[in-house]
Image (cartoon, rainbow, N blue to C red; front, side):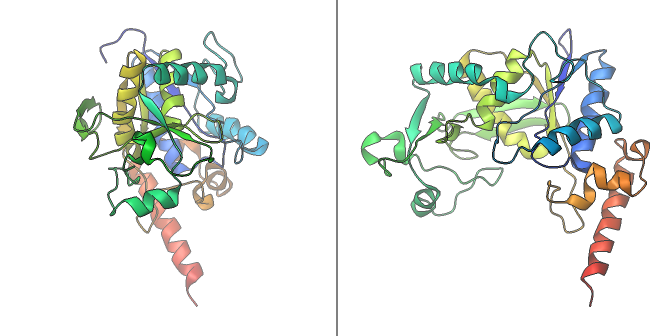
Length: 296
């Protein structure tokens, strides 16, 4: 790293129980922070009010600590750059939205998912998100009058976004081809992930973001937001994803691979660590048990 004062972060969302994939990524975040003699921050990404539950918040703290993670700033310990839960930072997101609107970087979009699907022939972004066809860039062509509007960032079509990932190396994405105009503010008056993440990482002075490889193309989107908001971007390290026995990347629906379930099976935090070979053994065991349970 070429920045003094390393600051990394853990950014779980308390919408379910943390799983093995989270542990692997968060463990790497802690390793990289310690290697730099830096600071690790915990941020609770709790904007999805419909899915956030009190028991998941409690479990988040318990599971992270059981796994051996330590942070010096966070919702439970405080710090100089709080609040450290996104639900308490709405004023900052609104200020960023106002800045983007004043700079003509965003526009309201009233297209429904059905409208978008009907307007495209099947192009998808590099992360399999449907590329928005730009219908509402022209207000005269907008549909869905009276619907709550999502606000989309107008990507500069054809611009190549380059960055160096500290794990995967050089990355190149083309705006308008690898990703389209993306939502920064939802119609239910909540900031989207892309905007909230950029605002918080900048405000919390994060110098390196460690997260999963499924967010590589999101980094390209976010770099455009950093530029539009006049904010310095952090550096990035994207971890390889863990998949279940069927090749599907782990998600919170994989309850059998949650940290809670693994702990109940007698697996220790030391065994998990960031040992990829042990992770693979756990996944193979999980796949075998699923296959056995489905056999007649």
